Image (cartoon, rainbow, N blue to C red; front, top):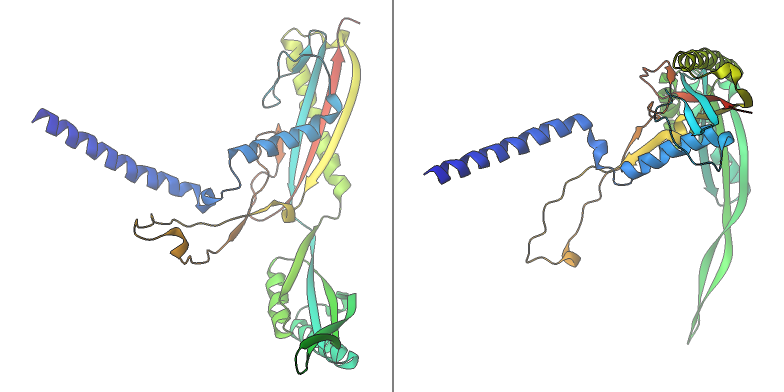
Length: 324
């Protein structure tokens, strides 16, 4: 009886564990199904950021102490120390530039151009309400002849001859806009002209230098705080020689930060069914915006974001040489 009660108790605990694990896993979101974005690739991303920030502080000396989060000094060896600050700012775009691609085929040159112009005119007309269409730039991409095959049937053979069949014209529309809701307006108007290919959306920041200047000021104050902390710990920075003062800047745009995943759960294949006899359903691929993680930064300006942003990064470091 005691053994039976013990087994019943263990089974109950196991069932509760399965239920709770499923509940807690829901908080992660479906992005956990993403196969390509495991912990190893995340580690590579962090290392890449650090190499970009620390590329100027390479040394062949053995390392005795390394700060993980940048809070403490980085001791290269007994006579060399590096103080570093990594800062980030999330910046919303001041404007956007959407690019739509149009491909038109026709039997003759005149027909091809006329069909293309009809589609562009329909788009412009649908967009004219509350939108300045004069700022749209139509970019000519290519005009190439197209060919088809004509089969020549003979008594004992058949041959295929390539003959001209018409033209293919490609153009791109560059459409500036100011607010995110306007992109829906653009795509609705584009559909009226049978234009569906949104190539990309560029995010524009007017004063990039001003962003880096702000990051430099914040980093300088934080670097001074680190210097004071070192002095409080008994590290005599005043007696050290500054052998290197360096800074590094970089940025990442939303176009570079979108990731994809396919979320699904398949049942085990029945034993009597062979793998080659299975007809699988095409799974939908989902996309999401994945900003750079804040782990490697001492300070993040505008950390709370509700929409894709441009992330500007700034790194400042000073190398001190002691005993020279």
